[in-house]
Image (cartoon, rainbow over all chains, first blue to last red; front, side, top):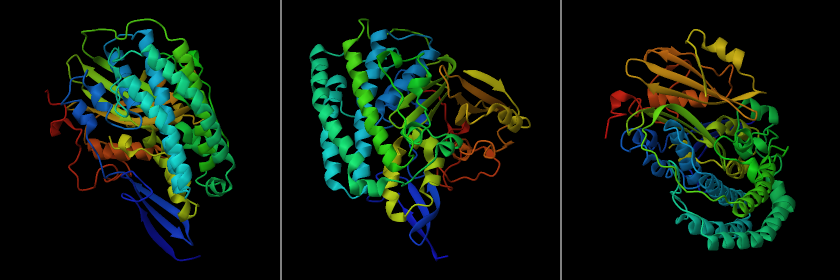
Length: 362
Length: 119
């Protein structure tokens, strides 16, 4: 038995762009114990949503919970508020929400993959992945008006329609993206250096994923078929637009890379199907009702299940809003998956978890 | 959403009988400050289509100690730690200092801290 050392990683670290702190206990360069702290940035958004803002304004506030899955937050909140005021949104608005969610998934997955490449020491692949991601940022701006904070989903529907010219551009750019995606798949799958760094790194079994209630790509890469898009269609008709469950079996950083790339093919297909089958209807259902009672909404954000609970009291201001981000569900598994790995692999493993502390410390 | 009332005495038994990691997963734990009382909630969801969210809830006094569920739900400690920090409630085997620093103001989501004050 070697001497044990405690090594901190974060809250500010060159390879961890999140205010998250890990304390590793290592022995002969191997992690034997991990502790996580999330207390660096608590922003009090839940409290603000129940005191400073009227319920219709909250979709804009929660859109700022996260820069990577802004649309998931504003859509999940809009859904829970729509349940409280008892309205159903127009069909076209549902399709447009799904369109932006899938475009957002493309940018988020590519961002995660680029960070894994960078933290694995593959700077050129980081730049290539970021370069290929840029088209979807431009398309999101064309659809929503913003690259990051979309302000697209509101209580009752969406703020903007999809212009025919923008729809055509999206279809054209997706055709250009397909060979780029094939190229990325080839590199992430077959590159010897990357495989060496990512295979068997940060692995978790299906049984552990189930035991620790893991969500999102982290769970699916371990073989646990869990995806909100597969579990409910009462709010958004995912199967109608071509959703397909993807799983991998390795459970390691390598499997998570491959899973995310495979999911991009599905996202591309969903976007094309939405554009080809976009129904005609208004964009918003108007109501003057105030939120009453309690409701929950779940949505599959790029990192997994995003959960909203809201309680109304027949006033403009909510009684309680609870946000459960996907990273929050994965903290317990992240801590366990790091144990047993070499300390040098920790940055790449953490990047492959795709943690979002902005969501978690909302 | 299906709501099932429980009590702190029956909580572990009720959850043990309901929760099967093969069939459903634990989403999160929540608390709503009702003033004199606190409604503590545990959310679960099926691995199925269509899925159903099941909520166990208990109405408790704010200074009561809640049993921890980590022997039944291995990942529950994360949600329990968060609630101790944000709602300033007592949960067995759970200390402050996970999502807020241990010397932070207690329970920022409690009504006595102006949370819920009308605009």
